[in-house]
Length: 457
Image 1 (cartoon, rainbow, N blue to C red):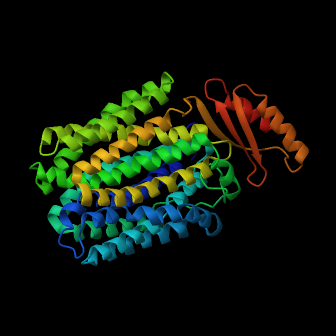
Image 2: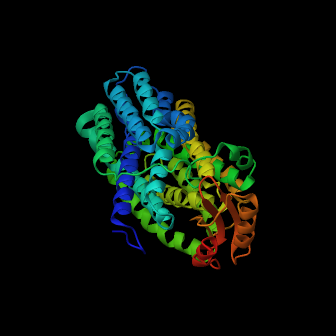
Image 3: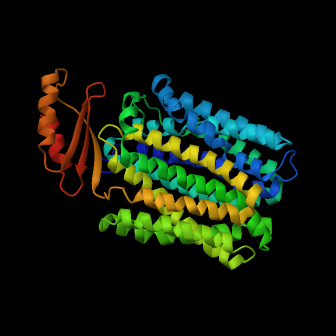
């Protein structure tokens, strides 16, 4: 039975199942990052440049196919797209596991990235959960992605030490099959609601959003954040090896650094939301990341300095990874969050690809210190770019089903005027095809029950 004030058992099961599927896929993508530079050296064609391409290759196909896969799920259903995406991910893992050259591994990584199911998973979560619990479902998925990254930093080095590089890829193939079983046996039945503008992209909005300077700052920000991530992991594993930390023990550094970083960001996330300090803290995180990258460059051969650098790096990375989607949710126009998120995700994966290529090129020409220092310079540009960000913290989004007749344009206009007159409403949009009103509101002033009563008169 449904719980009026919380998750129903069906919503809870769906949210955790989808989070698990999403998390396992990201775990499979991330596990290769801390190990390929160490364990791929016996492959034909191995070079620093190809290390970077292998690490970032998934990002290219992911960036290209992310939005189209979401649109396809609106037309043929979420589950077929998720099944197909997981099958492609499994196939790519097998291709990489069987490869004896870096070129074969790149082909496998490209196939892994072509299983772009993020949009379909988020849309299915929106189909199954009620609007008032949708944010909670998305948060569960987000937390699971963060956990998958932490697990990848531990599982990747351990699996590679025990079973070699191919063992890592065979594990990712197994994870994809487990994900398909979860879709089949754990996900509750649901009917696709078609396009839901909070989670899927609307083509007619692209031009408008690509001209929005605030959203473009966030798109460039997430691109630079993931560019640094893949570039760093081209060079950092070898830097640790040179500092005397055996490859199979790299997780000894990654795990404590990640756990400490999660603890460090919690008070700052709370402080930013409560004191309206999101922007200053975000800018401070960019500077912390720059310091971390410089420490990586100057700490060659000094394990304690590299450990400190990784704690600072992960702290800044995790704070910004959590903050950027929150900024986007608050700044995206009413009824445009799905489109804004599509552009944002495309930028993220494009950054992962560019970072791998850039990191490989720099490492080949300048060594690890050169990678860290030149990537640190991008933080200067990012800090300047972030200076123009809006400092928002209390803006919230709501989607409300409309229980009144909105077939006529006049009826929609009257309802829009009444919604806009409510205290705290910044924007209102009615989509007749969805039978829904999209609102952007001030969370401190707006009363949701008042809006519900109004639209159900």
